[in-house]
Structure formats: C-alpha cells, structure tokens
Image 1: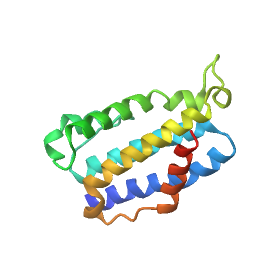
Image 2: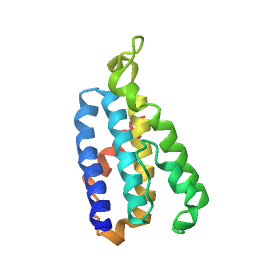
Image 3: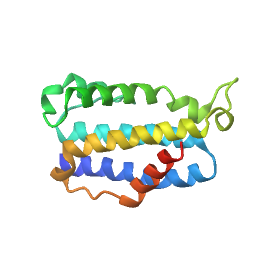
Image 4: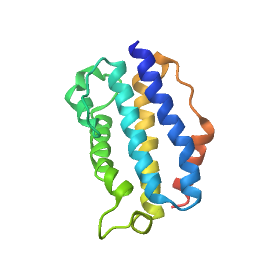
Length: 156
C-alpha cells in the first residue's frame, strides 16, 4: 500500500508538471511558482512515504529528509541539504503566489525569473527523489515535460 501511495503522489506531481506549460505560456508566473511548490511537496512526500517516514501535515517536508538522513543512503549530504533548503525557500511563496496580499498582486509581483527559478527547483528535487524511489515503485518519467522545463531554464 505504501508503494501505491508513493506512486500516487509522484503521479499527481507529474500531472501538475504537465499543467505548468499552460500557466508559463500565458505569463501566469504566480501560478507556476505555486504549482512548483505543490510539485516539490508531493515529490518529497512520495520519497518519505516510500521510506516509511510519517511526515505530518506540513507544506515544508524537506526537513523530514534531513532529520532521517540515515534512511537516504542514496543521497549525498549536499543533496539532502539542498532538498531541505529548496523546500523551505519555496514554501514561503505558497500562499503569497496564490492569495497575494493588500500590497502584492500575484500576477504583477511574480515575474518570469521567479517561475524559471521554481521550475529549476522542481528539476533538482525530481532528480533527487527519483534516486530515492523511482525504480522501487516503477515510475515512468515524462521526458516531454522535462524538456519543457529544461527549455525554460535555457531562456533565462
């Protein structure tokens, strides 16, 4: 059952990755950032699930990987630190990108560079997470979406 739940989280992350191109193409960079946060959260949680780690109801699960470092021998200390840092950093944009604030209008505030950075974070997290569980749960990687994400990085 744990593998099935991990696969589900991973697949839902991939569905969101597929939706990124629409928001990116129309210039809705706020929703790209928000969806990237969701993608990163789902990917990290899939990795935690496959390792049997309870993560609680948090939108910043990266710290759980750092706290359980010994359960992730396939990741270097540098990779674990990067997962923790990315999860923490992008978590800060979750509500702001979605709701905005009195002085922050999401469609005006978030720029292409913010979306490109968030997409780069997704690429990094996805590669680390696939080391953790890709072969264990039989994940198919969507190469078209990775190509889209790599193209957006090249446009920076």
